[in-house]
Length: 194
Image 1 (spheres, rainbow, N blue to C red):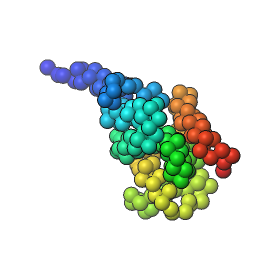
Image 2 (image 1 turned 90 degrees about the vertical axis):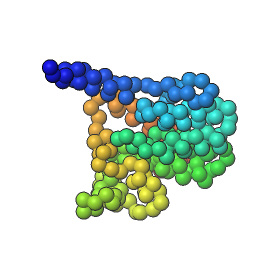
Image 3 (image 1 turned 30 degrees about the vertical axis):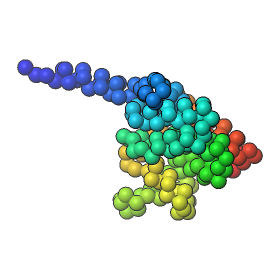
Image 4 (image 1 turned 90 degrees about the horizontal axis):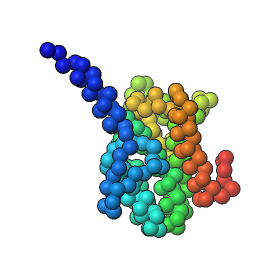
């Protein structure tokens, strides 16, 4: 007797389960981070929920540490950059303006990669990457571009940038850009569009 029909049913169920919203226990009860679009990774959600709780309590330095811990995680087939604007805001609220601006610049460049305005390209088929503008101009190597390349570049991510198959996908990414500009307006008033 073949068991393939059962596997065919089970696989879509497991995929749906993997990408469904996850409620994480952040040590203070259940938390569902509605602002976080991805991923459904429990450890990521726990760190994010802890950061949200600390942020609400006005413990901005500790919230920054929790968000940084979430951002430092390797996620399966998802570039981990979504919390960068929030991390920049926490640095700003904690009074660390230099770190807030640096994190905001990283968030901006990561969003440009996500939107397809800046692209990752490899050298001679190796895993060494560089960033370039759509015009073809290579961005200068710097600690910032190195951080963004490590966060955003890789063959598994290539299909996720600037390719929208639905309006919902476009709106989800637009929400990330909107959050960035909201934080930029608070951290660096008057710098919009630079």
